[in-house]
Structures are given as C-alpha cells and as structure tokens.
Image (cartoon, rainbow, N blue to C red; front, side, top):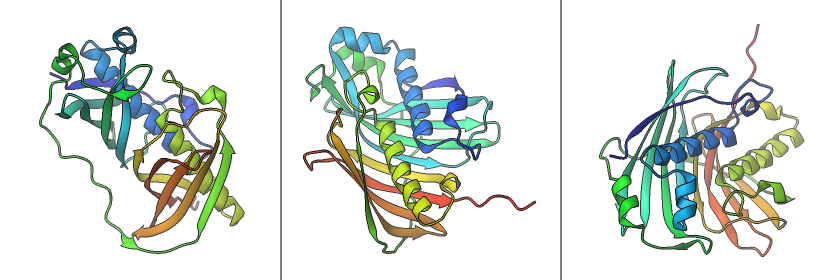
Length: 258
C-alpha cells in the first residue's frame, strides 16, 4: 500500500523576514514528502539510480491553507491516487500542523529512463510499491473572476549551483523565480515585497531549465479571487521554448496594527 504518514519540519532558512515560509520552500517540503513517501515503500533515491529510472514532475496544484510556524511539528499524509499506462502517476499530499491543514497538493509525475529522461513504463516491483489508494479528491484551483493587468518580464541567468540530481533546475525553484518576479514588481510600485504570501499554485512543466541559460519569467494579472490576485505565469528558456506555465494566487498581507 502506497499510503504513508511522515513527520516533517520546516528549516529556519525557509522563513522570510516576515516570519512566514516562502512558497518555494513549501514546495520543497512537498517534494520531501513525495521522496520520503517513496522511500518508505522501498524506493529511496539510490534505488532509482541503481535501476536507471526516475520520476519527473509534470503538473502540480497546491493550496496553501495555514502558514506553518517555525518549530511546529508537521505531519504529511501521502499516497498514490492513480497510475496510467504504468508511466503516469498522481500523488496526493496533505500536510497538517497543530493548528490544522497547512498544505494540500496534487502532483502528476512521469516515469522516465535515466539519463535520457524519456518516458517509459515502470517495472513491476515499482508498480507494486506504488499501489493506488482511493482517498481524497484532487486539489482544486480556487474559483476567481476575470481581471486584466499589465504584463511584465523578469529575465535572469540560471545558476550552475541550482542543478538537481537530474541535472536541471528542481521544480520548487520555479516558484522561487515567480515570487521573485512578483516581489520585484511590488518593490518597483513602492510596496513591501515581504508582504507577499502564497495562496495557491498550478503549474505545468514542459521542459527542463539548465545552467547557464537565460530564463525569463512572464507574469500578467488574470483574475481576482476575492482580494487575492490570480497571476498567469510563463517561464521561457533561452531559446524561447516554454519551460513551464500556469497561474498562481498571491495576497499581500498587511502588518498587524498595534
């Protein structure tokens, strides 16, 4: 059975000057839950290396419910909810803290051969370990009303030290880039970037980013979910290919009045 419960904590460096965890570091917490969930059923990273295979993320939908506080003990509940053609799998993750549900995520993964990263069928041992569990429904993206705003582009060069074990930028880094692009726009407008708080994310990954290529994050207001901004995002590689696209929901949290 693929369902596993894990104990997790956020490291100190995951927190901003506002004492709230950054969106990218919350994605790293979800990745840790996925890797440890696989490890708990007999498939740690070193076994994937030995077998010459891996999983790469194709799509993620994340809802941020309660921001974990530093030092809080967190519990991750994770399971595989679907497997198609022995290649395409969906993993659900729910992370709770002492105050309730913190994060909910639906992750779509593709089984690939390494090092080519070409999609292919998983072997029977892996399929048995990742047996499907029927539980909660997939995480939905928030409803919102259409709105329009100006587009912006945020260019940068990908660092060599950002490369992950599969030799491309790890998927939580994309959230770092998106939030930096939005923070830069806030700073230019005279707003405090540390007030930015993640509400939801939905990204589809189409091509890996590799160092030292030029990367551009394109952002545009797409809608409003109450007072929260729904931002369309597109991340392009140096040759103009789309590496990831989707949308995020962000709010500006005003400081408490004493």
